[in-house]
Length: 417
Ligand code: ADP
Image 1 (cartoon, rainbow, N blue to C red):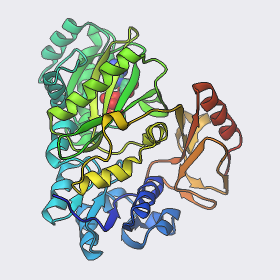
Image 2 (image 1 turned 90 degrees about the vertical axis):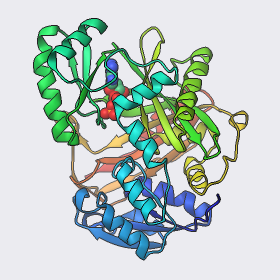
Image 3 (image 1 turned 60 degrees about the vertical axis):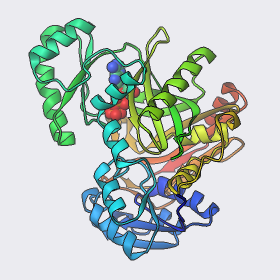
């Protein structure tokens, strides 16, 4: 059934709020932005048609406060809520809360988020869809002896991961049997404190892994298509910092298998809206399912540039109950796109997040350069949120050209203070 979306609340801040509002404007949709104390006067607010204060600076008291967000959505009389990434974007309780008010959540259903958000249940789903999964436990570990048995059967090194994990947190590599018991206790307590859910599971640790993910789009008529892969192997502390598409490590035959696996998995759970199926690839080019991110990703621009598809626009159209405007055959891929995430970090101090006022910033521009940011001169990077300053995306006919443009953009980037 087609629904009318005329006004959207963006339950987010910074660059992604701006990104979503751009697509809304191009679709003739009005936008509502929300801000915490720390974000008062932030550039993203100037992009919105209406602006509402939602609370104190800590995310718990603002961007994570479901009741406040739903309350403003009602007050502003919006039709839909776009969650961006992070915050409430993968919270099934929030989706249900939005549904219960008769509002549209721009994303998958609560059921799909719940099934795929739990990494162990997602692995089961992948297995059922005939998608290879990393050898290890498929359900949460209940005891140290069980962990020892599984580790012995898959072989060391292994990695302990939080079932409810995210953001690269709660992972522990175990290289030898004698270290497993201690690591088990630490991983469990870390999972409990970071995610209020201490279930952990175990996987074979893939050496020199490549992280390769597939962007998918699915409408509510059963059409699922993919927009190719992204290579996200350049990470720090298990967090992506540079992404590119296509992956230089994937040949056509692997690409066909990888994208088909992602589509099969999404079809199997009746997935709708945009999502990303993440895989890990070993040195021999064998890939295994890792997890699904049921939201728009930070690195979506590299895919947008190669395919020309506005992913946010498609998200909104799908949420409105429309059919995907394109078929797999219509998706074409051109050139090579790279994204660099620029962070405020103290490089002399282990790259810890850094806070403060940006005294001077001059974002790069030039042929084949896209810059997504929520900051300008005088903006403050606070300790409350992610310290990302911007995303530079370069495009070129070839990887070499894309790299040259990226280097030139990075060279010309001025950030002081
Ligand atoms: P999160 O949801 O916290 O981002 P992921 O499951 O996506 O966690 O893993 C993040 C990163 O951790 C991967 O991109 C990869 O670099 C590393 N990783 C995860 N599982 C494994 C594994 N089994 N072997 C090797 N590295 C892994």
